[in-house]
Image (cartoon, rainbow, N blue to C red; front, side):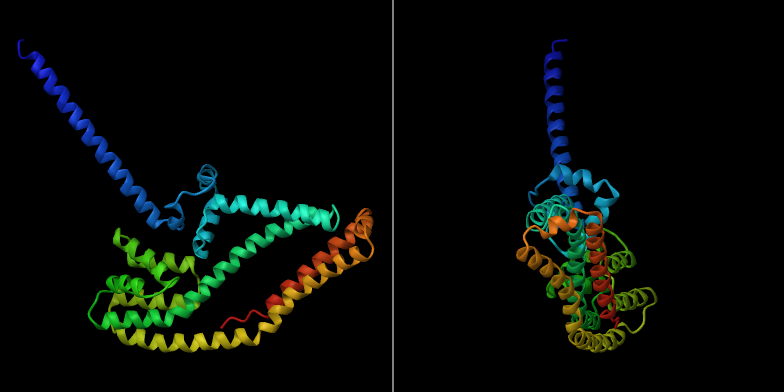
Length: 310
């Protein structure tokens, strides 16, 4: 019994040491897990910094809308979270509502807000398409780097990591995501499939199919990549020529709605209060809605005419 106090003190000290060690191991593991989630996340570069509206962002990510928005934001390369984008979009819609009501008439407030909602989605699609276009322009260089690395005897996984370091964004950033997924044990097929889902294009699909088939069945990877490089260069020049030829049609698609808005502003400036009186009656409101619908149809038709898949 005389050693009981010593045993109690020793056991207490041992429990304290084990508790501190366990807490240290838990915090270290949690930090590593959070860092890994950030690296693998579509918006990991944005999540590493202190972001605004963190509570709203966490709740939004649990919804279907939030997950779809996160995927789209990840494809655009914008350093913004879904919560921030939602708040900014709502603020922009409110500003458009107020400006349209003040400059035109109160009837145009909700219409401007709906147009603002469409414009936010169109902005994301435009950013996404612009990033895809830049990525496609880098595909010939990417194919050339992979061919050189493979010819030097490097494995395909190592070649992708080297290409991620040598190429500029967006190709460097996208390949770095693929390399990080490969580093944590994901298969090459799944990592490249996720890349094609995020940045869909015919050129990338052909490159990914070549890499996947070569990785599965073996074969002359170098010669396939060399031939693919020449093909991608030719398609790049063709796409550039088509875009140049259709630039006037694209400008026309955006100029037509601008002319309509300018005509309304001019009419309201010449006859102050004319839009208020016109939209105060049912037939006037119906005429405005029909006019906006016709302008929208014209915009869509002209854009469809200028969209040529190469």
